[in-house]
Amino acid sequence: MTQAPVLPDGWTLHAHDSVPSTNDYAADLAAGGAAEGTVVWARQQTGGRGRRGRTWASPVGNLYCSTVLRPACAPIRAAELGFVAALAVADLVPEGRGVRVKWPNDVLVDGGKVAGILLETSVSGSGLVDHVVAGIGVNVAEAPSAADMRYPAALLGGTVETALQALAAALARRLAQWRRAGFGAVRADWLERAGPVGGPVDVRLADELLTGRFAGLDEDGALLVETDAGRRRIVSGELLARAA
Image (cartoon, rainbow, N blue to C red; front, side, top):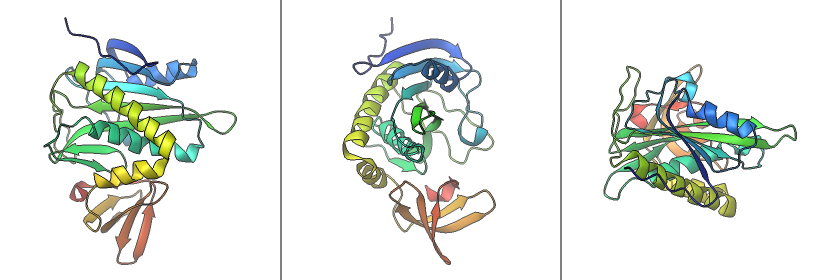
C-alpha cells in the first residue's frame, strides 16, 4: 500500500481520486472557513485550468493540488505568493538538473515546463485578502502536450505522494520566509533562479508584442524590460519561449 503523504504540522489533506478542479474545491472549503494549510489533492482533474483560462491537462500520474492560504495582506501583495509558490516547486528539483523560474510563476526543468501555478484570491469586506487558493500542477510521471504549449513538458520523476509531501514542506518554508523576511528575500531568491539579466525577452501583452532585454523585477514583482524606447514595467503579460 502506498504511504499517505505527511504534511507540515497543522496542515490538513483532502484527498480524492478525481474532482473537476482542485482550485474550485479548495475555494469552497476556504469560503466555509477552512484554515491555512488545507490542501486539496486529486489524482486527476476533469476540468483543470491554467492562467488566462487555458485548459490544464490532468491525467493520472501527475500532481494536482490546491492549498488554502490566509496571508491577511493587502490585495496588491497577493501576487507575491506566486513567486513563493514557484520557489517551492523549484525546491523540489534534484540537484544536478537545470531549474529556472519564469515570470510570473512558471518553473522550467532542463528547458521544459515542469509545473504550472494558478493563484485565485478572495478579498474580504475589510479590504484585506480573505484567502488565496494556490493551485499547483507538477508533471511527475506524465508529459501532457497541447497545440498551444510554448515549452516542451518536463518530468520531475518519483511518485506523486513523495512530490506532494515535499511540495507542502517547501511551501510552508517559503511562506515562513515571506512572512519573516518580506518579499525582498523571496525576490532575491527568485532572481537567482531566473534567466540572466540582460538576456533577450519577448513579452506578449494584451495589445502588443514587446521585445527587449530582461532587467529583473521591481520591488512589487513587476517584470522590468529594457527596450529601445526605455525601460518598461510589466504587471500583466506572458514571457514567450525566447525568454527561457
